[in-house]
Structure formats: C-alpha cells, structure tokens
Image (tube, rainbow, N blue to C red):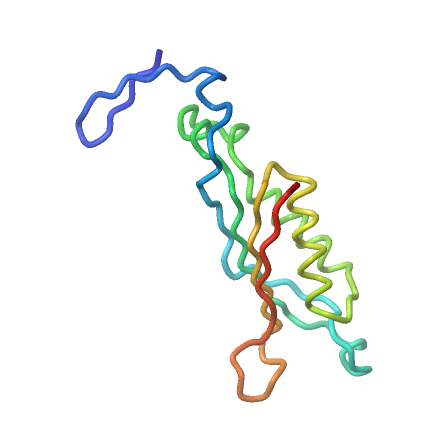
Length: 142
C-alpha cells in the first residue's frame, strides 16, 4: 500500500499490476520542435543539400505507473525515442515529407510502447513567404 498526497488530502491506493491493466491510454507525452537535418525533396538541387525539418510529436502513454513509481523504467522514454528518430531521419533520403512522416510514425508505433501517435513534420521555409509547410498525421497501432 502506498500513500499519496494531493492538495493536502491523503489518498491511499493499492498500486499493483491489476490497477494498471485495462486502463485507457489517455495521457500524452510530447516532443516539440525537434530539428533534424536530412536530404528531402523532389528537385535535383534538394537531392544535393541537407535541409532542416522540424518535428512535433505527441504519443499516447499511460503515465500512471511511472508517476506512482517515479522510475524511468516505467515511463515512455522520450530521449530514446528522439535518439532513434534522429538517427533514422539523418540517414534517410526520401523525396516526400509524406513518406518520411509515415516511416517515423511506424518506428514509434512498432519499437516503443505507444498505441497512438500524432506527428507534425515541418519542412520549414520551402515556400517563399510561408513560415512552414509539411504534414500532420495521426496513426494507431493495430
């Protein structure tokens, strides 16, 4: 039995495995503004240079167990996710942002404990006068 305090109220709750099974993944872990350089684009000149893309990622994760234990092993480790995505994107040479976005989502869903992901991929100033262009996609696992 663990005792937790919230707003000066004593809250007792038995946290065992049965408490966490079947809970809805309503919590979101996010990464905002992850800048990575890569080869991306359809034009010949784009194939010869590296361009920055900027990612905003939202991922479903039930954070209750991590919050209860205060241990990183129970959390969705966004540092590990970012390291994996950075490595992948730096090595990739896709033509379309749509393809890159899809592949990033597949990595997150297949390699990490995530059942839903929302990804915004911003190619930056690809269009004169625009602050950014890109795609926003949502994918689920299953």
